[in-house]
Amino acid sequence: MAEEKRVLILQHILENPAGRVGYILDEHDINYHLIHVGRDPLPDPTQCQAIVVLGGSQHVYETRKYPYTVHEEAYFRQAILQDIPYLGFCLGDNYWRAHFRRR
Image 1 (cartoon, rainbow, N blue to C red):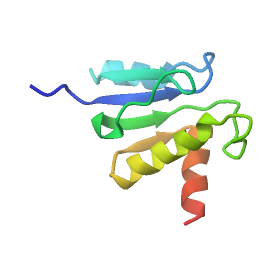
Image 2: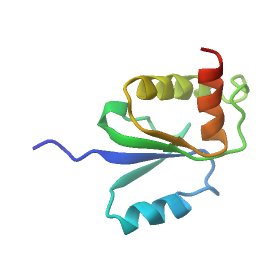
Image 3: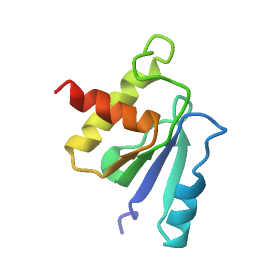
């Protein structure tokens, strides 16, 4: 039997946990997986029910300072083009805006 898809929550700084998003998912018995970007590997986006991208002190254009953001942006682009629901807060919203503004 295939493993149930979970919501993926991407955390950019340890001080910014799943918080209210996690509480809401828990209230509705929706499984989620919280990973720390830049430290933990990103799973195959097709295995995600949705992707929630939290904020952080990084900026989408600071690719030299935060080289993992290049891979992260490509990951989001792949997920969005595959119609995987995406919700971004602060930095997460900036990734979305940066990608689609260039199109």
